[in-house]
Image (cartoon, rainbow, N blue to C red; front, side):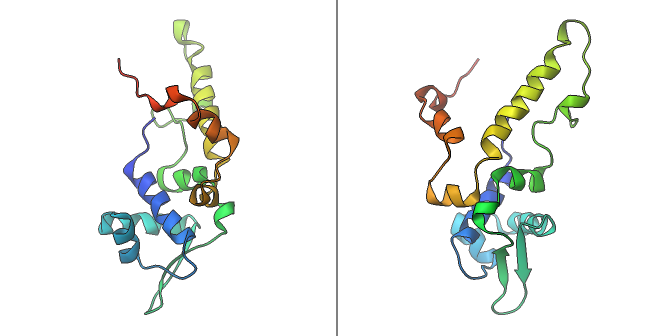
Length: 152
């Protein structure tokens, strides 16, 4: 699974908002995280439509989190900016039907979705900001093998 730039940028911008008590301009967010301003503007619009941020115009305007950082799961952010997780060819894995030798492949895709949910639905912005990650994350990061990229 690849995490698209849009999703990573959204999380980074939201972490910056989570660390602030005041409204933050899109320009400041872009500078703070070294993100492309125009792309970030589109991402912030998606986050506002998805109910994760609020915006205010004017000299004191900018963006704020719409919820407490401990109530925003990383999975929520990914779904707002990228749609459902672990789709297969744009379809939900439970809707797939395979024949013959591939008949059990759907079970693999369901398991992949479950593994993603195990981490992403149990990690909040607040936890990432504090570095207080749950066991569903640290059990993977504590394993040295997880830090190694495998090639063919």
